[in-house]
Length: 90
Image (cartoon, rainbow, N blue to C red; front, side, top):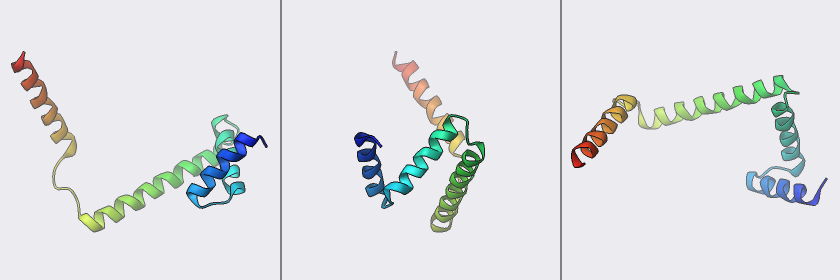
């Protein structure tokens, strides 16, 4: 293994509190998936990411409840107000 690669893997492993070999295995799996050699692993990784996002969403919902508004409509309305203000200022 190249010295720079090992240094980077060690840095990541320390930050994530994992072993260098565990981080190296994940890096290899991700590299193979990116190269199209490991489709099942990529699907599993994506599924795990979605599952984790759902867990975080559920935890946040239990803690704070559901937002009663419509974020998309609110963002659009705010953008319209900004455009209107900019148009009137010119």
